[in-house]
Image 1 (cartoon, rainbow, N blue to C red):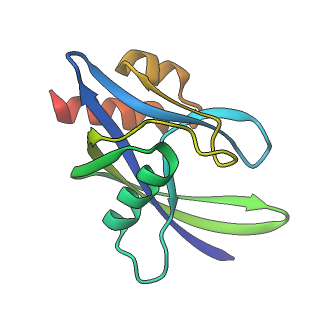
Image 2: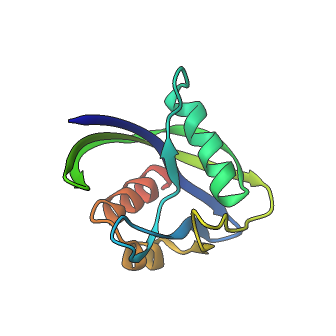
Image 3: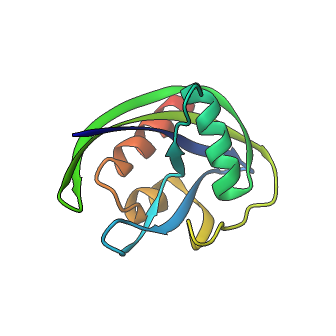
Length: 138
């Protein structure tokens, strides 16, 4: 079994209504899914630093972390190999930056209202993370 560690987050802005930033990218099966931006934590890197770096790389957004909102752990198989993955999710406030996709990692980056994000997000823990972020901001 191999171990993987990732970090990312729920990026939000209020102008004036609350919106969350999602990326459209392919999963391991090649399906396009709307998802939260995240990526691999590099050796010696703190999860918080990895999350900020990955958000900037994948979306163009400059962000600051408000707080950690979740630590998810799950198993998956790829090419007959078992992986145990831990993902650190942070609630992150958008500061500035040109929002743009980063092909081939993702095809589109877009702001969604909380209701839109909950409906369109592809992974099963996605709606939960959107609700948790929304509750933290109320």
